Structures are given as C-alpha cells and as structure tokens.
Image (cartoon, rainbow, N blue to C red):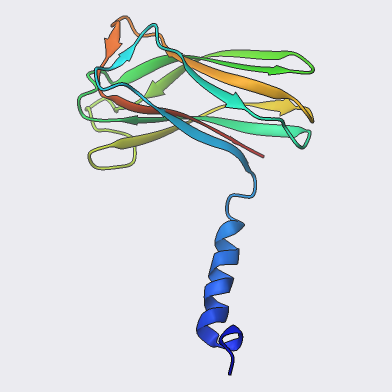
Amino acid sequence: MTILRTPTFIAAVSILLSLTGCNEHVIYHSYRHVPEQGWNSRDTFTFDIDTVRTAATYQFALGLRSTDSYPYTVIWLAVEREFSHPDTLHRDTVKCQLMDSVTHRMGKGIYMYQYDVPLSPMTLHRRQTGQVRIIHLMQREVLPGIHDVGVLISR
C-alpha cells in the first residue's frame, strides 16, 4: 500500500481541504498593534485594501482587543472607508460597548478581550482599491488598555 492511499493520509488531506474553505469569503482581515503607552487621539490606524476582484456587497467589521486596564465601558470611534474608481467615501461614528451596566466585559477572552463590531455593508466594484481609517473620539488624549485595532471585510 502506498502512502497516498493510507486512511491517515486521506483523512489529513480531507481535513486540510475543509479548513481552507472556511475563509473563502474573507477578502481582508488585519490588525494593527497599539503602542504600549496607549492610543493617542492623533494616531490614525490605516488599512490599505488591495484591488477588489469581484463586484459585490461586502460586510465590514471592526475588531478591537482590550485589556482590563481600559478605564471606560464604551469607546467611540470614527471609521472612514474610502475607495477609488468610482470614488466612494463612508464615514461612520461607532459606539463600541465593551462592558455591561455592572462592568462585566462583553468581549471574548480572559485577559485580552476580543470585540467584533459590524459596520454597514458597502457595495464595492471590481478593480477598486481603498483604505479604512480608524481614530478614537474619546476625550482622553491617550487611551490605555486598547491592544489592537482591526478590520474584517467579507462577502
């Protein structure tokens, strides 16, 4: 019996093929790390989106990772999604609820909490390129406890 016909090999290949199909609709997923000293209100996190291959309506989500050192129950963010050819600009003000009314973290995790916040869908055209820009709108100039900021785009 050759190695290509053993049940273990066939099972391993089947598992690998099934795992590669899980994210076939994700066209972009990336995080930016926040500096150790905190997220300064002058810092803009920019995500460059490569050429869109298929015209469709895409789902956008904002990702945040925070720790217990974040001092507030919410974070307000400004999100700009700008694409060219044709020129399209969406500006959103997003309220991310990080804790409930009795200060229990609403994110997934133990030490680091993951939050996924859906944004409004956006129709993109073939060959468009773009950027997603995120800033915080909190009154405090430097926010501690935010570890990463990310963007997910899927069909």
